[in-house]
Length: 158
Image (cartoon, one colour):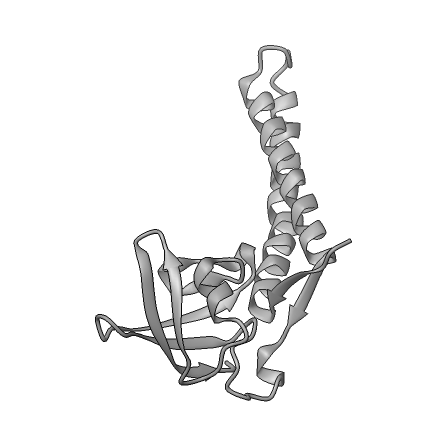
């Protein structure tokens, strides 16, 4: 089976969610099902059906997280020496050559990507264009808005 890259923070967040689902949400759902059963006829009991549906979603999410964690290749970029090369997990500071705007992105796994927090997927066009490049390199990245030229200002192993 293929291993999927994941940062330490991403793996910790998934473990935290898994723990919450197993220790808080799952017992609450079981209790809700038991309460709904006490109300009588299960065929027409909306509370029972809603609790069972929620249980299905919860169990599905537990299986999904366990699968992701089982196939994760957790990479701690802070333990890798900084050579100035763009790798998975690093935080890259870019300068848009046309607009002189600076932007910082952390390159993370698919499940951790969150553009609002400047965390981009390793499979995104920008990250694919950056991987393997070094500080002071100029690169052209094809985006939906057209070609954009960037200069890599800094690579941080945070």
